Image 1 (cartoon, one colour):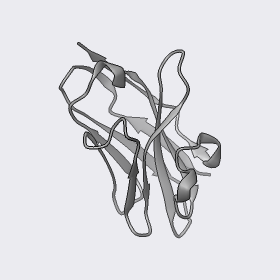
Image 2 (cartoon, rainbow, N blue to C red):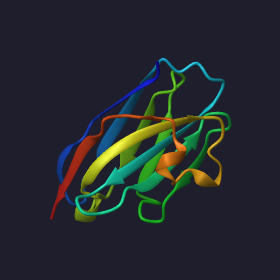
Image 3 (spheres, helix red, strand yellow):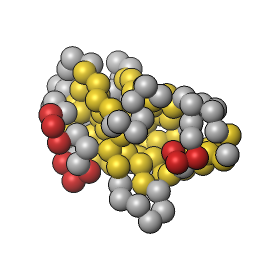
Image 4 (cartoon, rainbow, N blue to C red):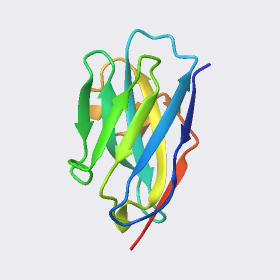
Length: 125
């Protein structure tokens, strides 16, 4: 059974940094697309970053490009380094996984098979 567990959220002032982790267990596929999403109160879930384990290709939403970096270790755990945080980055952050390549659907939440429970990020001005 695949399990994803996020950690690393917290409260930080604008301009600060946080590093989120997504611990992956039970995944046996040859490759995986790991995605990060966020959802703020009253807003739709937003796909912000993804990484394909096969070639380490990365994908970013315009809202985080240049500030966030997605990575993965050999155990398939995923990380999201978030720099230059803004108050509008405040949200619950989730990681998600789907076997195979990320393709053009990486921003679509329903495309993923597995989800974590989320970790809260709060950025104050």
